[in-house]
Length: 88
Image 1 (cartoon, rainbow, N blue to C red):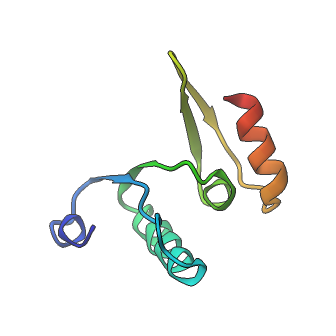
Image 2: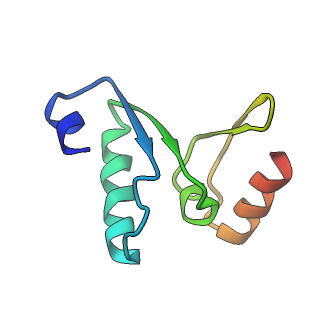
């Protein structure tokens, strides 16, 4: 991630960026990504729907077909997680 940030890429592709991190480190990463998303497009793969759902604008689910949904974070992680799972 540091290399991508150093090159000031227009698109940031991330695969499980918070895997194996504790809660505080994950929170710090999501805050950094929120700031970066003001001028950088971020495409992130994650299986951890709960924490991610309060930070995303669009969710895509891949299950033989690609489904995209514009998402407005509600702040309620449980409802967001269930809504995304229902969508996918």
